[in-house]
Length: 175
Ligand SMILES: Cc1cc2nc3c(=O)[nH]c(=O)nc-3n(C[C@H](O)[C@H](O)[C@H](O)COP(=O)(O)O)c2cc1C
Image (cartoon, rainbow, N blue to C red; front, side):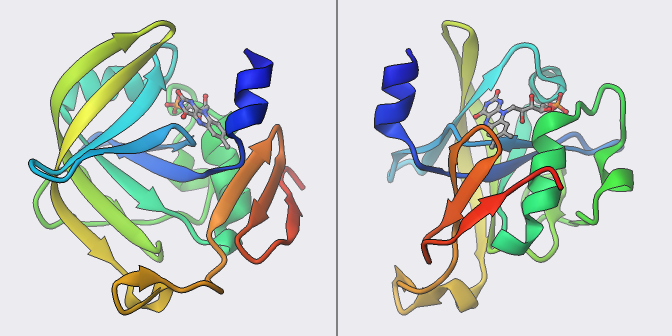
């Protein structure tokens, strides 16, 4: 299994927002586009996550694309559980209303992808939530025309607490 992980990484790192009255945020590498028509996006979430039970209940989620400068908050979102702590109180991440779903989006991100759950697929110790994309809010700073900018520093996860960016820097999380 670790060889498979080594073979696939680095992967881009995302944030998953769930919940409405008490929103929660968790970090996820396992996010994958699934279909153009209809527009579908998958996120694979362990049943142990608080996010799993919240998505099961609300049946919506938002995938946010963090900036490199948000690494410490990305790390907190990926190492603390919303079951025990309000991550919006211990990070500088802030929500803003979404356009098409009741789950909020995140301020200051490269993009927010608003999804309603179409289907839940059991995949071993994770569950793949297949989301139908209702709205994408992408900041123009990361793109030149239709393509992402080649010099925009997207956040990539190498493994453990080690990250890099598309500009080739090594970044360490956790202080
Ligand atoms: C970089 C990184 C990537 C992660 N990717 C995933 C993922 O794709 N799926 C998953 O279930 N957990 C993933 N995790 C673990 C969760 O983010 C972590 O367990 C988090 O504390 C769950 O928060 P919650 O209980 O509030 O939902 C990742 C953690 C990190 C640090």
